[in-house]
Length: 161
Image (cartoon, rainbow, N blue to C red):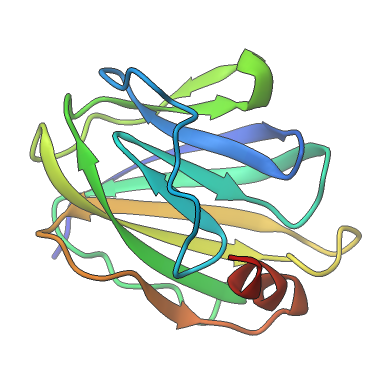
């Protein structure tokens, strides 16, 4: 059974984005030009998270685990995974334009290779219930994967790159 540490925040979103940033990241806004999974763009010690609305706040949960906690297939409409390297083992969620920073529980294996699984609920409809979940656990590099895809807005981002 996986040990999981969670933090829940009301994350401010501008321009449909926010960021996961390692404390040793020197260029937190330097992302790859494309993404195989559309709604999360990897960078060196950073990841850009895409949201289904342009401005506002969203309930956001980060779950740091010591092993793969498994996807929540019933609770979310779109789910993707990417590899992530953490130089320090300490991360924050950053709002666009340096508005606010939210600490993330320390990564369970310290610096090294991790997997990010990004869950999204409510990407197509701002008026409906929405929630975002990011799971993080230690894992050697694997190719990006679309675990679940149901919304039109997700397909837009998947094809945008």
